Amino acid sequence: MLKTDKERVIAELAERLKETETLVVTDYRGLTTSDLAELRAQLRKHGASFSIVKNTLAKRAAEEAGATNLLELFEGPTAIAFLESDGDPIGVAKVLGDTAKATKILSIRGGVLQGSEVRADQIAEIAKLPPEEVLRAQLVGAIAAAPTAIVGLFTAPLRDVVGVLDARIKQLESQDQ
Image (cartoon, rainbow, N blue to C red; front, side):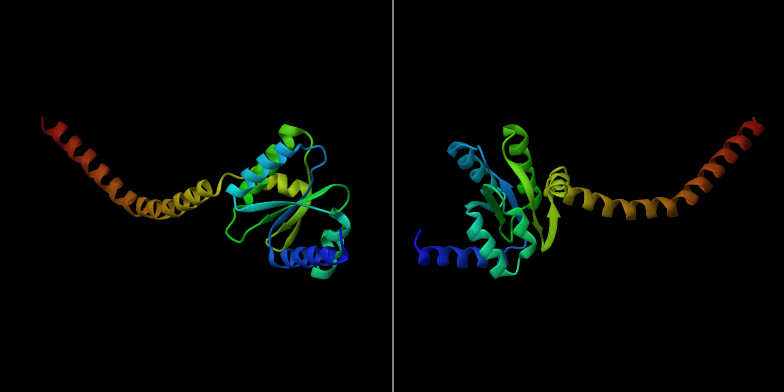
């Protein structure tokens, strides 16, 4: 690779590292070309791209971008899943985790989640979360449950009074007969 090409790649990678708030660094050693193509297709569905990077260039780009926390992750064959701003981090974590389990080859090293450094075990925990739509539905359910509970609390005394009155009426009716 020519020096100008290397400088261009470093500049592009440094820019991506600066702009991307969420990324996952993996070791792809042993994955076939078809495995990589399938993985890329699945990641694209969740708003992520998957790039294989040369460690020396990645380290220089990380230093240039001020992302020195990533330097230790760039050892051995390295690929980075870059999440777009509108991507689904849970979906990306699930795809990478499922691929790691299925192939027993891909390994997750760590990454950055919305600007904060995350370890491989934390990414595995993120992968266990339900999909974004389910989380939203659970949130809406929790929000809707609060007013329902409040209405129930306010109507309970009235319901009790009605029940007591009804029982007293039945008691009085049975005494009259």
